[in-house]
Image (tube, rainbow, N blue to C red; front, side, top):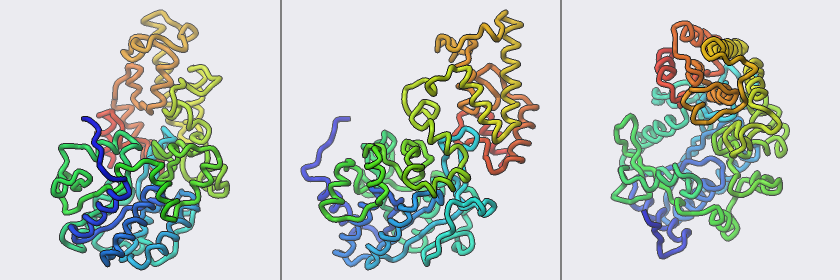
Length: 433
């Protein structure tokens, strides 16, 4: 598909999109994270709302373990658009979030009452906060540990049913940030509002809702965001200033949830910029310090380096086992016995003793499970391959029983990732749930 250019600047195009939304939709709310894109989107939208004498609502999901500067910025945004604000939904509910810095705890739950003693921050006290104590009675769809991606769908559907008609939800994403975001805009199979490509009709369980996401800044670049901030004197999160001064490039500054796949690139800055918050985060989210140390190595898949510098694959395997043992010693022992059986099979069938196993072999042979190597073992541990299928093992009843016992004992560690590719694990996850 060739590039398509418009005959106007991106600011003019965005303002026209806001005008279209305010004149074609019955009601509107904006999804805000405290990051630069959504902040600019909201402030520009408020300009157009004043012109058309419209009121807007905002949904902000508070992830608990965030920069204090982000919370300060949110308070400032509320004051900034107070004259056009209908409602600000400040969500502080136990929502399941991605934790890309741990193979032990791939998801964590913010605002979990059972872990209140280790919360990073106290529950905010303001008129906008929605928590488990004051949640609307109609929110029967909300479940403890609900995925963030599911929550925002159900919230939009609830908002629409409260207001009626067609609802527009403003999302501050830009195509140049990721291929997935580009696909969101250019997807030819999606349902749009009156053929407008920068809108997407929201579905829940394949059922259409009357909610349409719209992306007014989809064609903006990072430089456009900061140009708008400077030219129109817009409010912005001061943590960006600190990140820039600390050497983080504009393209790598991510705030929404610091432990996500993209946001973890800046995780090593958390400690330097807000040390008191960092101390609490260390106790709250598993793997944070590991992410702080290795967030720019292939341990977390960030660059092309093969492993932490100075480690052989054998040493790296031992390191991973020891790390697992700090939190779930039974899981460490499970993997240890699998690896031991793996070596025993090679020695008995192939005549290859453990001392003869090389650190690396041909990748094609490793991937096709035709040769033993320490890299093959380390990769299995990285992927939290409970059955150790990468070492040619298969699921068995003993392992199923063991995993269910571990999941029951370590409920706070959610050992099975919902995004995992293994069908047997997904089926078992459904059984456990």
